Length: 329
Image (tube, rainbow, N blue to C red; front, top):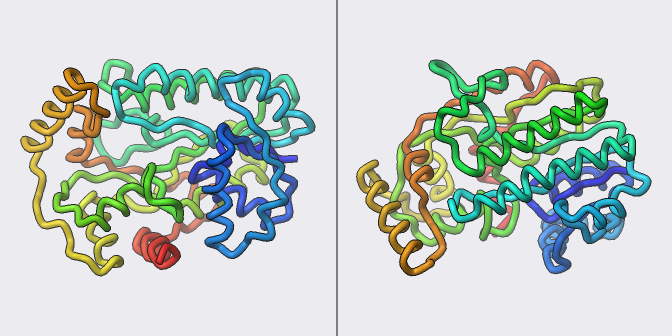
């Protein structure tokens, strides 16, 4: 039997859809019963309602050891998709608790129950830095360079996975870029679709890596079925500017493209205003200093390792966006 943690998240939900379609015996974790509806809506979106009941759902929190022990009964393979994404400095403790401590719990149970193989979902945020060229899997992490709390938590989670490998666990790791896929447009990468739909006026010229969720889960499944172990892979289809992504979404929604360039000095002012509001009025952070800098940074990622390992061809981001919007209409 296969265990999928984070079965109600973007990657977890799409992974469940693919695994169930393949006829695998699946158990999935959730933290709150109402969140299962998000995964159910994905099955409905793809007209696979009849397969949803085949999932063995179990309430479990990756930071709660007793509930995890129940989830690991009779499990052979584990896909660890659960995690917390936030770039709000106020969430530092929560990020470390869920992403690092939670992953430590997962790998400890994998070792205790002699799991055959673990696939861990990390992030390009956990990659190190390069002085020139594209960022790749072997880029060395420099603790002296400023990293977001999210990046630090994902790097810490990877250290737990590598520890487990040294103790005998078979592992593979994927580091996706910004993941785009059919989902409810209110959280994660889906929020950008909502912002554009609501007539977002600003754009920036920063660049990062993007990938479709279907490619992510396809690669995860292929890696788990292969003899590949002890490796991590950058999952990026294309390196694109934020302007390009926003314009493509707007075009597919048949609405005007954002036409105001948010210059670095503008976002610098905005994050300071946001900090002031958070400090004195306890409002939720919307733009951190790191995020205000990142949206102007040109980060390019190298995907050759996974393409060569699996002879894999990624879906273009234009077609990913077109497919997402056509399904949501």
